[in-house]
Amino acid sequence: MSDGRGHEAKAEEHTDDVLTVRGVRKTYEAEGVPVRALRGADLTMRRGEFVAVMGPSGCGKSTLLNLVAGLDSADEGEIVIDGEVVTGRTEDDLARMRRRHIGIVFQFFNLLEGMSVLENVALPAIVAGMKRKVAETRARDLLDLLGLSDKIKAAPGVLSGGQRQRLAIARALANQPTLVLADEPTGALDSEGGHEVMELFRRLHAGGQAILLVTHDAEVASAADRIAHMRDGKVVADAVDVTAQAQPPAPAGV
Ligand code: ADP
View 1 (cartoon, rainbow, N blue to C red):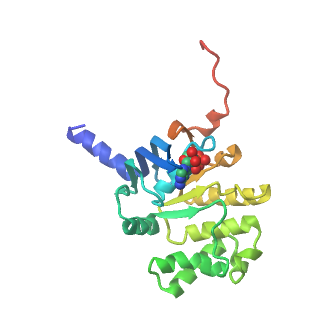
View 2: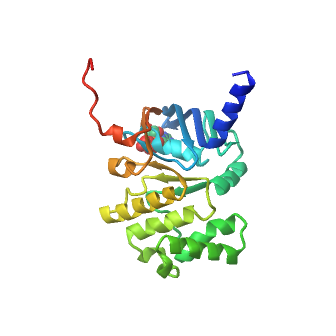
View 3: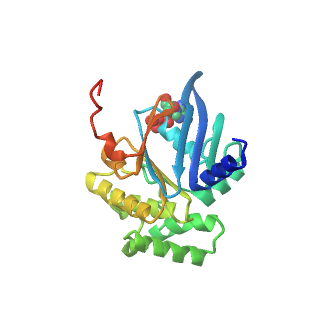
């Protein structure tokens, strides 16, 4: 839009969005055969929103999350996080962007087993340039908030699955990320551990944290404000009202 008003409206919309994915394409090669993992994916998240991404295995969910995290680069399209275009950046730039904006939670925790619980949470902040003492104080506060304050000296190996994932979430929050990304965070947990972790995501969201979570579990997805359904490398349906998802379709002709 070329008039002044249209322009203003667009600028406002932009600052409200924490994530914009526009026409993103990614093709991998597996044994010489191209695999089109993303075929023009679009997704927008508003500040503080909690979005669950669902879809059949192989439809591109993890690829989308990895590209948003800057762990891999798009072939085409644009990804904007908190007003910063992250597509087309160098590896160093992406690492900086990740430290500033992104906290990642993986299915299998990715904890440093040789370090204590406290060190696992403090490390990302130290890597980002924070003084060790300050980072450890912040880590203690986070572990307290996440109900792990009595475990700070323990090795991650002695924790239950749910506690290990809570620790991974504390680590993801260490740098006060704009956006928390979670790839099947309950996938390796029993139902008790899964509930523990989802309760924590609900609390973080209630505190204003934006969360983008990939899951194949409808119960997990129901904690989100919105479900983005993916198929064949695209977001095909973006349901704003999660409860409306459960309604059967209206009969034809009504
Ligand atoms: P989902 O998370 O929905 O299961 P993925 O994003 O993991 O799907 O994968 C989408 C498609 O891309 C799949 O066909 C998968 O095999 C392929 N793929 C993903 N990563 C790679 C890779 N590094 N090399 C080759 N193919 C890949």
